[in-house]
Length: 258
Image 1 (cartoon, rainbow, N blue to C red):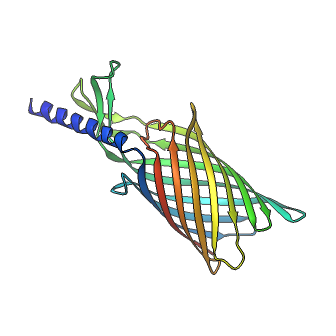
Image 2: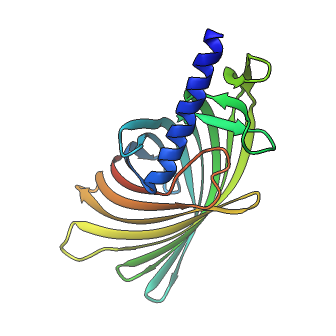
Image 3: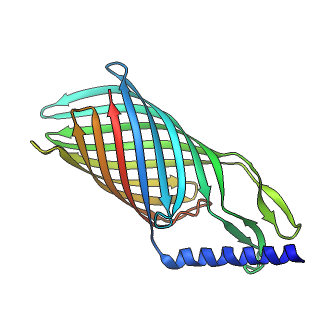
């Protein structure tokens, strides 16, 4: 009886928190990025990167990640005053996520079925990209197509089955996403702050899942140190099981190139 009361209170708290999240509307978070890139040859380069994200108006740690990347410059063409470049890249990222709590209901839409408290879990992400750039004077336009596969391993004892009064595993799941990004940047003469702007579309099974709009500035110090300040707005149409909200995101990053 006492255990049943505790479960009921937990379910009520879950419903209240989800309701509050919906009522608050757009979220706000911070993204902190740190990376290094090494030029291996005229065509090859490799890098490492780490990231920390927050959500819930920066009050909650959302995830941290660490990854490896490799890039190959396929070709470059000169056409009058313009330059066209084509490159391919690939990478792996280890994600450690703070998964939000979830309450699933039965077919009647009222009766609780299963409850998953908030928990930290691992995901593995692989990506392959093909990107083209057009340099026209000081203006650079870029189009990147990226295939991304993310696998979430099974997590034991994270989901509570209310009918059977037992804890079940959250099943493993793989997800394919196509990320299409159009980007523009401009190199102002005698000015170290270079503005950038981009729009990115995330497409998965069922159609467009979200759009990400970004404005930012890059500051280069001695060609090796790159500092970036970015603002992103993320518009979510179908969050699947990630429970992402529409978000305003402020990003700070540093990359060392050598």
